[in-house]
Length: 317
Image (cartoon, rainbow, N blue to C red):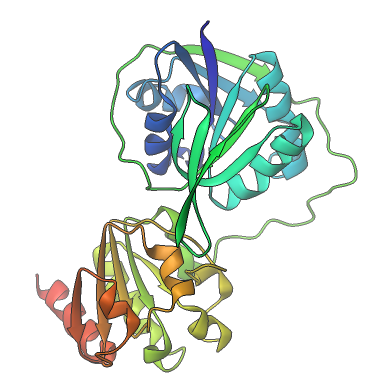
């Protein structure tokens, strides 16, 4: 029997975020139809790119203009769409939006939910995720009429698979959230313009940055290499940078292609949040720092000297 798999698409300024493509690749399987649910744009504008990764149905979910930013409305719309199109498995990204939306969907459907997955076996209904500060991998088998998975961004390499998609519309403009009202929506902090969870390159600072002003060194370098800037818990607790920049067990869990740790000791808690990085480069004056045992390359030096030099080289290049 053909299974209907639903993928909740995240967009940025009307464009499909690249982190969706690895998730779509993971959701593809034999004897399945891939439904892409689009809430934040004209679905026709993203049709071509979604088709190139194997989407066979594109559903444009209409919401009332004043309800676009209401998480309760969005969840209700998705729940109705899941029921309407007989979706048996729901995939979404483990991003800020996904961490808000997916648990709401799972709770309303009484469906099992596994977040931060890096592997899913659709046939066996098995998901894998890290637990205990990344020390172990949990293999979880799910049962239920609808299963919900939150996928770690950048955990799966995207693979194209050209298909021809059918365009569908699902009108949810009648849904109005009760008991929950969005009073104000603010812009993204200029210091976190590139989302940490979705960045290909992250340059992060820790105790070795010494103060908040020195983080500007990282921001200047990050602009040259199109990177996001992160931080250890020490830097966040010291008030040098906002919590939104924290990488680690109690912060953001990331999987960039390159992670540059500047003046970060590399505690178990921090390593748990970035151990799945493709390449880890450490800059530290302490040759006994734990991060030096868990990296691909390291420089025994002061990041406050190395990073400005690197920025100058990039300027001249």
